[in-house]
Length: 145
Image 1 (cartoon, rainbow, N blue to C red):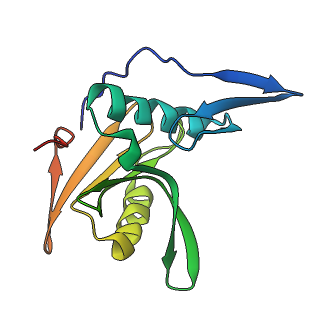
Image 2: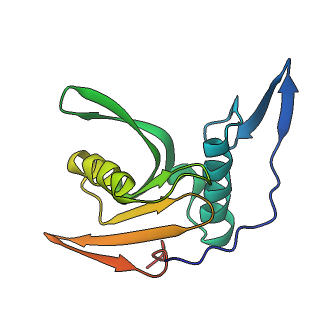
């Protein structure tokens, strides 16, 4: 498991009618504040503020085509103009099980990244892919390396 120390949140949150919205700094839009969105926004802030991943190289809700299906990756990190990492976020009460791992592995059929990360805000797991080999990692990769 990867240990994540989330920074103190500095989100812009507002209420419209009965709906809470959070401002997504990467997409520059207000989005509905769902439990999964809360995890995604915290993880984005961690990548940018703590890990120093460049915000302009993060794609949020990146649409991909998987066969005849259109899917959305929660976060795709780009490096050297290519997808480098996929992050799949789940709400806190969703277990990070085989189904979630299968989901992100399916996304990687299209994107072919070396790093896969799954998180529910309470637990975070990562995998490094090299060719046909996959191994669990204990920390997020250094973007600058």
